[in-house]
Length: 89
Image 1 (cartoon, rainbow, N blue to C red):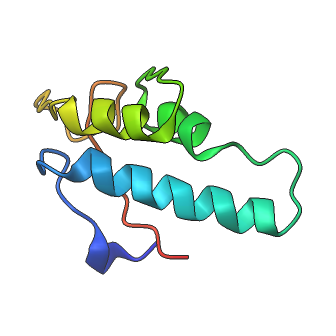
Image 2: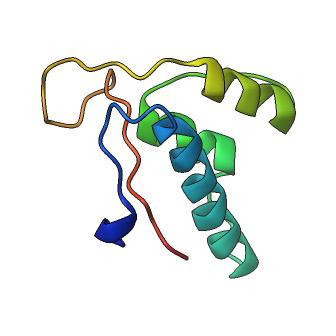
């Protein structure tokens, strides 16, 4: 994890950054031949605790950008947190 690229949980683009990171991680393992690698959408939903079910990437990303970040007042990771971990691949 590249901490210097991380953002606060309430950052307005945090979910977009997280989706981008999920795409990079998913592609890395898929290119490496890992059959069990989650798709970018499956990974995003698992990490974020959201359940976005759009059929194509454009609609999925539109839902991601329309989802407001929530500040639940708790610094711990929770399903209601909007987190981006700034992973570098």
